[in-house]
Image (cartoon, rainbow, N blue to C red):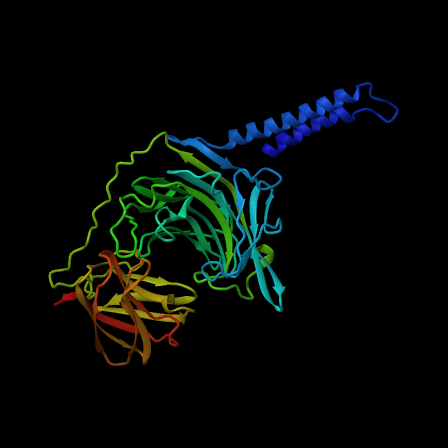
Length: 476
């Protein structure tokens, strides 16, 4: 609609200046035509601005702080900075971030960040783009709304995220804090992530949103986060899927800073398309770089008139052991339960893993048809295992398989930087039932969200595994 309005104004200008036939001459002086052109240019600009403002919706309780609808001819450098970086700058990513219009440009009312594959010194070389609003549109608290379409392809990693204007205020990452509004992996296009990073030691809390049909590369979706002094909430297409309110930050070994630090300082929005790295893995022969484009339709930042900054950090809730002292719920598999939620047992498949799990005859039975490409491609977990600093724990379980094979077990920290309370431990299970026992001491900060894992992926076998009598208990 906005572009039609501009075209109509330009058409009117052409009628004023170009209607005379070849046998006719205009009697209007040059000064008059110049004034008309200037007036029409101003009219077009004002019309575009009016139309842009009209299309930005009001949100109840908020006022619009700033926005970019990406309807100009080039990136608005009154809002955005290009942020060039060399390959390997972070996360072992492969791309060079450039200031080239080949990597960052506007098209059809969208910002396009394009990853390009070329060759340098006989090797694959990748360029891409990153833009930030640092020192131009920083703000403290508000609602960020962005509509975007992600590219498909192994190794592509688009993101919309926020960092503090002054990183050293609480110390370098992760102590400074980070708010990830949206991340999608080009190899896992039905899943989007909203994450917050903070603390020392590094902690994170991540929510996931999984589409029932299609992928985030099929169409545009609206991603948003509401950032308030005592809580953050993540939405996709208006649906709430993740809430966080219990972050912290501190120097290693020191006292925590007053809550809600580090998220009580100005942050800025940034957007990029990474190639490769420790999370998505590197691109392969299936990655189509002709279509490696991250498209952003708009970014809008709203604020409430005021925020109550007198907030208190919620108390941590640690679940109790059962009557036998076991912190693993349904560890004897005596109850049938859904295995596709995060309550008690939870079965997961990633990175090419294929299989199924069921509870039968007091046994967890895990069958695989494809082992996948990583240890956690076929995975059984139980979250919310309370871990208290200074306590000693014992993990025990019985296991066997249809044929001898390896599995990996551990107790880790999905909301505390994935540290291991019980290190990743590879064990061999045979065809006869065997009891396995592992003792460990919790040496990190108290954590109500420890997680027990059994990982069956990428072990050179798809043999069915049977598990019984799982226990985690305190020991003296």
